[in-house]
Length: 363
Image 1 (cartoon, rainbow, N blue to C red):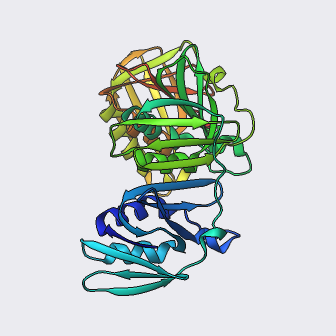
Image 2 (image 1 turned 135 degrees about the vertical axis):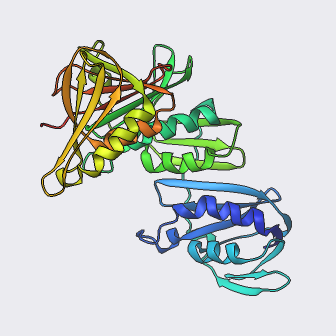
C-alpha cells in the first residue's frame, strides 16, 4: 500500500471512527483502526463488534493495500501533525508515515484479523433529513437507560404508528418521544443508545439526507462518506404510549426560561435530598412555585407567573426536569399532571411533535 492523503481529511476521519475502537475488548485488534484502499479512495474503519463506523476519504493511491494500527496512537499522532500532504507506505506490517518534517513508523496488525460486520443484503431502505434526525436525537437519547440489566431500555426505539415515524426512549423514570416525519414504511427498530450517540456526532454538521437500511439484526446509517452499522437490540419494547395521559387535572403554561431558572436555583438546595424538589401549581394566584429544602444548608422557594388550570403539588427529580427543559426549544412550556403520584408531561406550547414525561418521587 502506498498513497498520499491530506492531514485535514485523515485527521477528521480518525476523529469520527476511532472513538468506537475499544482497548477493553476481548480481541486486541478491536483497539485498532483498519486503513484500507477501496476504489481509489482511503477507507478508515473501527468496530467494537456491536457498532462499526467507516469513513471514506479522497486519496492519491499508488498501490492498494490494508493494515490495522492502534487507534489511539494513530489519532493522536495525525492530530499533532501540521496541515498538508501525508505519505503513507506499508512495508509488511509496518506503516511508514512521512511529511516534510516528520518520518514515523507505526507497527500494525494484519487486516485479515479485523472483524467485519456482515453486510445487510435484503433489508428495507428509507431516508430521513439529517436536521430532523439530529433534533430528534438531541431530544430523545437523554431518556435512554444505561442499565445493562434491562437491555431493551438501553435502546432508542424507531417505529411507525398511524403513518408517522416516531423515536422514543425511556429508563422507566422518564420518557421522551419525538415525531420525525410522515411515512408509508413499516419501521420497528431498537438501536443501542451508544450507536445513536455516535450517529448524533456524525449528523451534527450535515444538512443532507441520511439513508437508513435495516434487516432483522442490523441497521446501517449512511451519511455522505460515513457509514455506521449497529447490531439491533433483541426484545420487545414496552408499550410506552399507555403512559401518556390524554387529559390533565392540573396544568400550567409559562416561559421556559422562567421554569428553567427557578429549577436551577432550587436544585442547589436539593443536592442533599437526591435532587428532590416540590412544584406547586396554584390556580388562585396563577403561579408555579418550586420549593427545595436542605436540612443542613437551608431552604429555597422560587416562583414563576403562569397560566394555570387546576391546583396541585408534585415532587420531581430536579436533574430530570432540567434535562427536559434544556432540550425543549420553544419559548413557552406546558407543564401538566393529574395527581402527585401520576406522571408529569412537558411539551413545547407551540409544537405538538415532542413529549417528555417525568415520573414523580414519593414525597
